Image 1 (cartoon, helix red, strand yellow):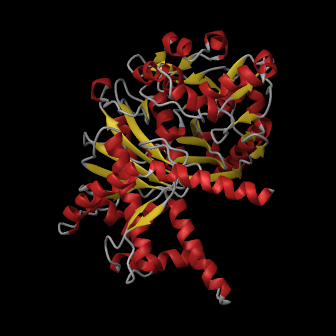
Image 2 (cartoon, rainbow, N blue to C red):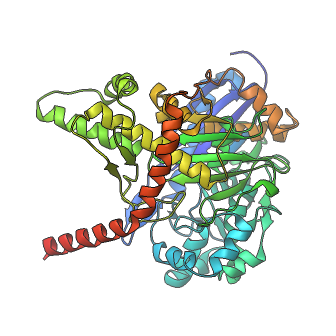
Image 3 (cartoon, rainbow, N blue to C red):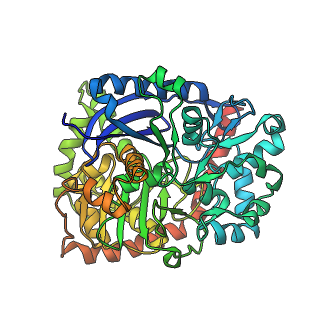
Length: 526
C-alpha cells in the first residue's frame, strides 16, 4: 500500500455491517464485516439489538485497523451510512429505549394504508416528494404513540441506524439532511416542515427529532473511549453520511459528467434512481409513490422508485431448477448454475412470455403500491423451455425497471447498474434494449461504503464538489457500454406497453386470489 490519506466508509446494512478503507482516489484497500442480526416479533415486528449493532460496528473498525497496520494512522476521516427508515429510540442518558424497529417492520401497515388513502397524503407528498409507507419512521411513531406509549415517554431522541452509530462515536444527537427530509421535511428547503409533521399528527413528538447536519460541512471528533476500543486515533473526524440509498447511488456513479444519468441497484429488491439537477426538475408521480431525496450537493436530488423483488425472482426460478436436480440425486453449486444460465439466456427466445416480477409476498411498492400483487407469466406456449422462462424473468426485471423510471420522471440517457444481477451480461443487454439507452456495470463491490467515504472526502476539502470527487472515484470503475439491440428495442418498446396494460388490469384478480387463499388457509386451520 502506498502513502496518502485513507478514508473509511461504514455501511451498517440490515444484515451486514461493513467498514471499508479507501485511498483518496477511491481504491479499496481493506475491509471488515460482521453480520447484523435481527429478529421477528409478534404482530409483524422486526427488531434489532441496538447495543449489539454498536459493538459489531466497533469490531469491524478494530479488524480494519489491524489489517491496515501502521497505515491506520493515515485514516483522515470516517463516513457513516446505514439502512434507511426504521426507528432507533434513545433515552436522555444515551441508552436504547428498546430494540430498534427496522424498515422491515410491518406493525404500521394499517396506519400506512389509512394515511395513504386520506386527503392528508396529498399535502405530505407535495412537501416530501415521497409516498408514505409502512417502513418509515413517521408511521412507526404513529404506532408507538397509539399502541406503545411507554416507549415514547422514555425516549429523548428518535434516530436512524447511522444516527445511532454517529451518536456513539461522537456524542452528538443529530440526523442527516437526506433521511430527515424525505420523512418529515420539504425537498425544496432541505429542512424539517412543521406542515408535514403537523399533518402526520406528530406535532407532540417534534421534540424527538434531532437537528439536521450536512456531512459535507460538519463533522465531529471520534471520542477517546471509542478510539481505544477500535484501535483508531482519538479525534479523527467522523462524518454523518447520507442514507444508504444515496450513498450507494453516488458510490455507484449516479453523479457524473452527463446530466440525465440513471442508476439501478439490482439486489434482492430493485432501486431505480434518476439524477435530478434541482427541485424544479422533480416530476410528481400521480400515484404519490416513490422518493425524492437530496444528494450531497447544493441543489441536486435523486428521484427514484423501488420495487420489492429483483434478484428474488431469479433466486425463485433457479431454486426450482435446484429442487428438480436434487430429486434426481444431482447437486449443483448455485453460483455456477447461474453463471452457465447467463449464456443460455442470451440464446433463448425473446418475449417467449411476459413476466411480472412480483414474487415478494409483500406485494409491490413501486411505481404502484399493492400488497396483494403477485408474479405471473402471461402468454406461455408449448415450445417454451426453462431457458426461455429464465429469459422472460430477466425481461420482466427490465420492464419493472422501466416502469419505475417512468414513475420517477422519465428514462435515463445512460444507465449504470450495480448489485448481484448487474454482473450478468444477459441482464445488461436486455436492460439496454428495454430502456433504449447504453448500460454500464459499476465495477465496485462496496458502493455504499464508498459513497459514505466520498462524503467524508468532501468534508475534508479533498474535492470541492461531488462531481469532481465522482470523476476521480469512478475513473476506471465503469465497464464499457452495452448498447441496445436495434432489432429488439422496438419489439421491447411495444411489449412494455402490454406489460403495463396487463399489470393495470390485474388488481381485482390479485384481490380475489388473496381471498381464495385466505379461505383455504382458514379451512386448513379448522
